Amino acid sequence: QVQLEESGGGLVQAGGSLRLSCTAPGLTFGRHAMGWFRQAPGKERGLLAAISWSATRSYVASSVRGRFTISRGSGENTVYLQMDSLKPEDTAVYYCAADPSYDTLVVNSAGTEYWGKGTLVTVSA
View 1 (cartoon, helix red, strand yellow):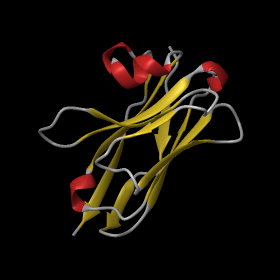
View 2 (spheres, one colour):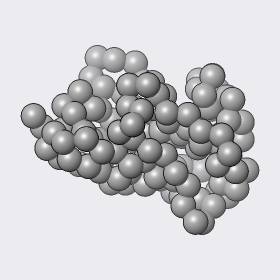
View 3 (tube, one colour):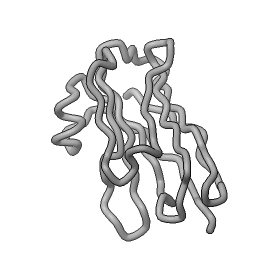
């Protein structure tokens, strides 16, 4: 079973920045769309951003558009989420996900094939 590995979470003050990274040892991302989700306490997990395997298609949720950027690394198995101008309401567990289908990732995340265990981001006021 392939396990995605997130890193880069932590504690940051409001207005600060963090960059999350996601890798998948043993999985070639060359043909997988990648995405970032988050789940705040008491809320459902929701899609933040997604990028196709070729990086020709991408999506960023309106709630974070202009502050968060998704990108793929030079290698095929790394994806980043750059988070700027962080707010206390961005506090959540952030999950990386991967699927052969970009549309599945964006439209039907319940069917997404691979998930990470999550990394906690805490933004203090």
